Length: 327
Image (cartoon, rainbow, N blue to C red; front, side, top):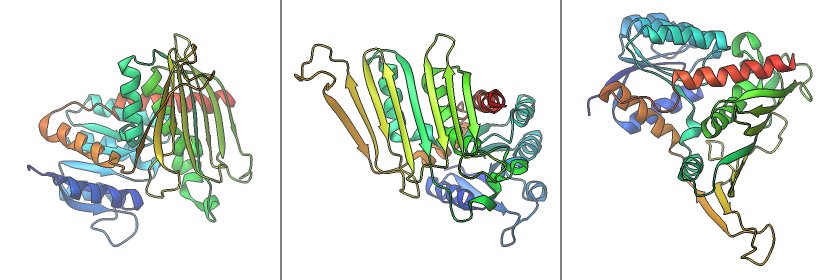
């Protein structure tokens, strides 16, 4: 396999996870690592890129430095894979877009939820037309804080750009866009309901609408003391329920998809109780699929399908609008 020489900037939990995935893939040669703490090849990202001269860089840093690293790398012709979110703000994302459009390098963002098995199955069902057209989606994504939650960098708006919405809720927003298409904000409320002393939100609620009047609702929170991922997709001829998500913490429960075809004639003998179809999953390959797509784009010239700059701009516009609608 023709290996891609790669630098990793940001060697926290996600940076180390990405390194493991690249080793499993076999097509990456990690030639340098960088972090603001000592113990790695570099502590300065610019020096890392200038001296190690990688073909690609994987960025797993705090949100406030992403735009600078991406733009610098793209200007040098270095291919970029960057974790979500795409910066602290829409302005950051548009800065990245400008650099990308002036470059011939690959740019991909890490929205790995699209690669989860339940999401893949749901998208296949929707695209098949078996259950008709999607008309409404209700998404809930919540987690608990921690004993040190109030000191985490994600709750410093100068570093993160926001709270739970831009940190975790952005994944659900990306999936809503993935399933429904363009969305605009009809209503939102962004609140500090429990963690009242923090400068960032612990809860965000939004009502969203497509140009052709499909509707979605989102609740993203850090008040869900039992971790939760649920998505209900109502279609003209059926219903899809996504419950649980396989993650490294194993705290979101079993990942499964259940779907039902509309049965108004009560073939089962009971109203509102159509035949149930279930699939459960016990392996999460989403990270591997992401890095495989990035490799194919870099080495084989294939297009980026998920996590494009267009995806990034669309979701960051929603994030910005949710924050501003509540202001």
